[in-house]
Image (tube, rainbow, N blue to C red; front, side, top):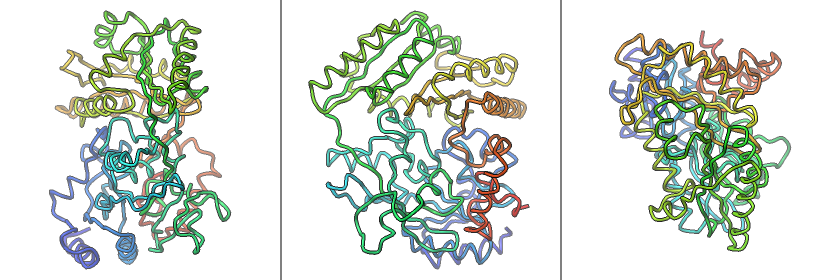
Length: 502
């Protein structure tokens, strides 16, 4: 888009939302070409991605509808963006296409909560921290707490990206808790889904109504089929009793069996695992003297009744003993510092991780059955051993060079994240190139194991689409073509719309 075209689009947007909420200067545009965390290759360092042409901050679904109509008229891409915490380039324009970034962070209100419904309705730009704060006043929670450690992430971004969520072992994934949506379609129409499809229903939020589940098509689609403008989600009472527990196990098989069983029985709210053999040498030097060469599980268990809570902890201890586990007494220490895996400590740890790894991080995210986690990690470690020169980054804080980390994050129904996270030294182009090559190798390896699924895809979709059944790809393209014939909705995301862009 040339300067004249950019000015014309900016003027059209200003007529919709007001000049205050439109920016087309280079500083703003390039700021929106950079995702906040884990985006080592999804911003100007990559030849694939670049800045938008214009940034606009709408406040209502009506404004977004008019913006989409304007974009259709000029055939300009539209990309909805929340907090920019993504790691898949979902909210970053393709360099050759540019387009309009819809920054939804001013759409951040809680719209409705009715106690008898056990549901809350809100705008997509609200951040996880803001929503938790509002709901906690009422003694309730969404259960799931958003992406690990990032209170600044928005609900709309998490829903559009199908984020793996804290507290998933107990409550399921974020998108399993979504009830109804309001969506602006690619032609500018505003629709409601689920129970709100009925014109006589104003405040009852139920998903599976009136035929097929039309909510699901927008979940995880990263704006390919429309812009989510309102969301209703399940809520739960905040448990009165909670403890963080730490167990060590003699080997990874015992650790994994324990993790699987306590989640299957419904005893845990959140659970992290660390397999000693998969730690970087610098971390082994820290963990080894403290806990021995053991595998670690940190978990939170909660209940609403003191007696149930006490018995639940006994049951967890019995399962740990079954697999040779031993408890490390940390509850008093955690309570003294006002920390827990589920609350303050989790957010602090996640925030610290983001600050330390931050823009230097190269993080792959996928999921696999928990019992297949070791197979996935073993093959990934072998790849990294062959490509040590691609591990250019380090963590000076602990004297670690060529650093990597494999956390185990448990989700619901025996699903575990398969993640490798490595910092990258950007001081030389060769470092970035080799890190990107390793990233591709790891992702290809994940998929080739036959046990891994990519749950957050964005524009880094080639690993999935190359292996998808042709009928499925054709079906997705047909939906895209029918809803978005001018291909304005985030072209390239999920691998869709690229043929038209070309």
